[in-house]
Image 1 (cartoon, rainbow, N blue to C red):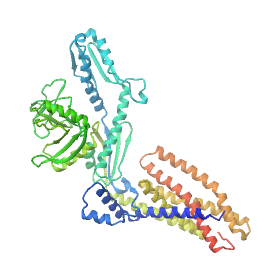
Image 2: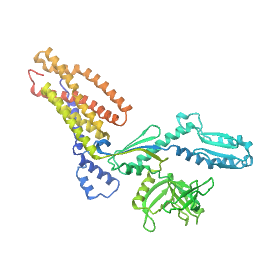
Image 3: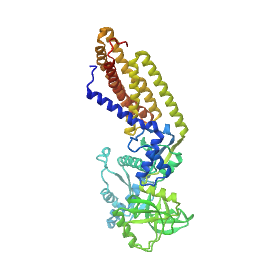
Image 4: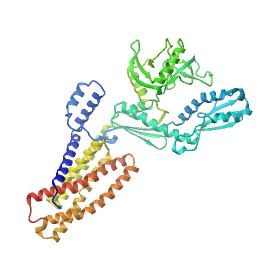
Length: 556
């Protein structure tokens, strides 16, 4: 019916008003963005500069301040494609098995004879048994340390592949465990990269997994790819190791349980360390920039309860001995333990600058990457390109809008004006929804909006053509009935057309990536809002116009 009940009118008006209010901040984009940045800085407890205070005052706090995020192609920024060296994790896992296997086998030394670790390829543990005829017994003991794989794809399989060769046990990760380890490594790498970029205060980065061992990182607003690369490319693996001795020879032979690492700040000095760390950076609960007793930049840290006990016990039993703090395979500090350090807190010194201390604290708080990364692609997109894209998008949208409005008014007169007004409301609703959900607008997204503008009036065209047909069939005095029948009989065609388009857009969103998904997001939202505005908003306009004018003859 042409008549729309009061509650439906109120509901339609409420949706339209809310949409316009939430879309409005995008008109004042730079001002609102500065306001939001200042609010975020204040929320973190930072003291606001005069410029930030002015930016915060530039937009009222009581007004909505959500805006559409601009993607990398519109804002400019950095893009990196990183490859995670998952093989490093295999080596670390296998190396960590040696103390456990040594302890288990050593308990049967009377039967097995001597037990010694041999040099082997990375990711492989070779253990030589003194009594070769007992190798089967050694394998049996080793199998007691083999556990089921904890993943759905590895159900029924073991974590280790344990074989024998002469008097040697050969231990490595099974294929099922390697697959599960790869998945965990990638998930952890994604999380660590995300934490580091978020901690640096960048806006709306895109961090997604690509393939089995690659990560795509897009950071809008970043000044250079090198800056992001330095931030996320550092492994930041921190360990605290016992010092066995020092040397000036980097190739000096060391024991199988030892490793030789260079000093970070003294050229030619190498430390021989116990390869099994006392505690690691994974046990840190806090790290922040600080100063040492001489006022030089340092990093203060605190361990969790378990590591604090281990750290305290170790320092209590090793007073007077040096203790190495190792970051990414370099000894950054090797102080002598002066006293028992209880409580699990301390300071890392290493001739840092203030920035280096701040960056190191940030990296340690975010956590260590499980493996290093190779950067296969790094690209910096200047803001000028984004500005050009925005200008081109605005021009395309303006031309599209003008053509649609001219066509609708020329074809349908007053009803075309209603359809054009509904089209403007439709665009506002798209921006309102994208602002509310934190959506990111990309160049393909602009294409989706422009396409929506072209197709949004399709439903109105169907309705208006149906009304024309009814006007030709009905008496002139029954214009109201013709309008009612036009809306009723066009409804099924409108629903059918938009459902199929909606499903297509959903498939694009689910299966697509990057630009395709950006297009699908705006197109999906556009389909929903265009159906609402084409059916309900224009109908409300027509209803109000008809009630006010009550034309005896309707010309369409």
